[in-house]
Length: 351
Image (cartoon, rainbow, N blue to C red; front, side, top):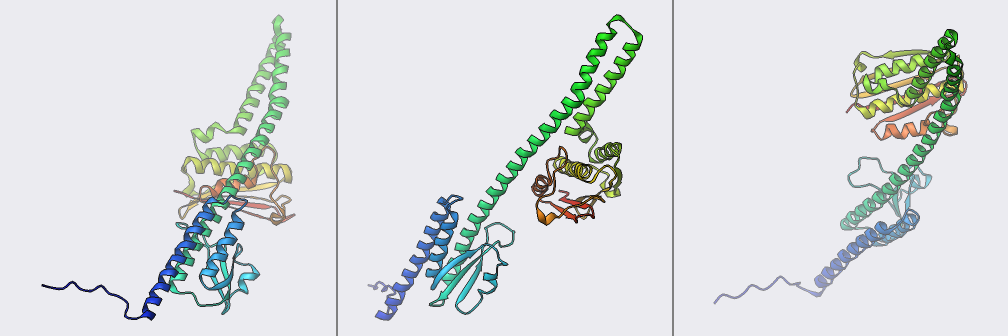
């Protein structure tokens, strides 16, 4: 009768202790990961920094370091000085994100060298921290965007209310009085009533076009830019519009609207802050798989680093425009110097 093979057992007490310590280390790593995930998942925007600090310290102790901290700015002086024999730096990353690291985990005061398994656990901790911080940043960005949107809506409503009151309502009242005078059939009063009715229709069309020009939906971005430039020229601005040969087609609806609003905002700002004599060049192109809209004026300019750009009359603001372009995976670049005009460049992927 064959005998059952004996299980592989440790040969001596030292090997048994080594296996026991390895099992304890695996359990410790698992405990740190589980507790880190729970702490970060249940943290609010207000308590996240405290939770991140606690997780960083726990990760440091796991890896054999006295202290751990998260530094948000990777260009911070603390990070540049952190490299050394008793310090270890891990970049924070968010799983599934191609965005560059926005911070680092710095471990200080080495008491023992971390094992390969410890380093793998630290990488997972950095992913958990990075994902939590990225989520909070997205929430803050969305809240800021919503605030800009609501503020922009109020600005737009105020502009429309003033235009209706000062333009359309006044013309309608004048037309009503003229019709009352023409009730006796006087040809002169009837002719003046027709002229006032024609002015009223023109004023209504202008207000409607300011909200969203029908030509943008009916014919597309290029005709809408031509109309926008023509309307700006009636205000005294010298507008030179250039449409590159590769841009004489319609982009996607969201891109079309965003680029039109950028052009509209830029012209509004130039008119409101640079005066009627300002010269503006506006160019639309589509090359290398990207739509590019540039608006350059020779007005008074401003300092982009001193704060947000001024809001134009009735515009949603360049800050909101930037957010809108970034939602399309594009970017809005503002280049300006006091006394040297302003250049806006909106770039959006064509697909």
